[in-house]
Length: 467
Image (cartoon, rainbow, N blue to C red; front, top):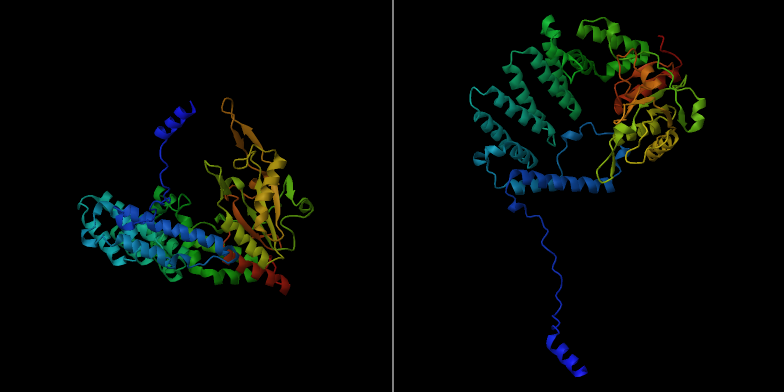
């Protein structure tokens, strides 16, 4: 029996094979094998993303103010080299026009601007003479890619916009084109180009008829803010920061007068119709919950102090993915606020927010639990002297079976609406007399300059707001 079992094992047992070392599969990126321009653009963006992730782990950039000319800086060399190697097969005269958009992006990533211009010209020439809509679409595509490129191609964008502006007899459309160039140049820190576009814009605005100013197209400019705001922005840019600061040195009332007179000049309306609450008294901030609790004993804004009152909502800042990952969209604003608080510790900083009965992907919290989550969210930003005013938001529910919660406006949102002409969002800078100096967002450079003037006024002991 034992012998038979031994025989079976001897005959049927498989022989042990020699072990081999595991060979890792080839995971290297062979961009020479990429078959489309889209794949090349994706490869360059992948390198860009990897470099950005590495920088985020090694460079503490939020301690530094935003570089106003950031969009004009060249791309990192590895990104350009990846794009060049992948684009080597695309010789411009024979590059396929059906890949126009990705090819244009690829040429710009590779620094082949002359090929990019030739591609745009060839694609435009391929449009049938009577196809105005297609010609406009090609121009819009090229313009969007030029403005989204890094560094931003302002010269090329300007030539496209000027060509379209000169070709149209629609003056409201021309106003929109000049505004687009002005804003792009201003955002990139190209002050000279922005001022030049602002001059063209104002010249067109002066030529508008009453019918054009009252047209629907004019009212829809600036994403619904209206053409008056477009013209006012151009005039502010032409005035320059120095004139605004000089007016503020004479008093907040002088700044209000300058702004209102400018509004009246560019719109033809009475000065009091200006929709910015500059020079208005800042209402007292109220709260159902204060962080820290002892902040409830101090008025906000505090008399005799420069104050920043910022409306910020975690619903607008925090988002969760399908995988439960949370992303914060507001670090640029909060880190700018921290830099300002570190630079000017005497300034009172108040964040105004509210409850919603939810907090990202957490189970529905009670108001006190939501307040604690808000505290934990904002605490790591280490904003000097920060005080947080949290309102318990009134709400109602849709009838069942829907049952969704519909939030109502909080008392702070109502009081900072200023007759429903201004949405309470962003930052309000308030002087020592409780008058609003700025209410157009947290422009760190401008706000810092305003604060310096206000503190100098306080030290000098003169030039109060009433003056």
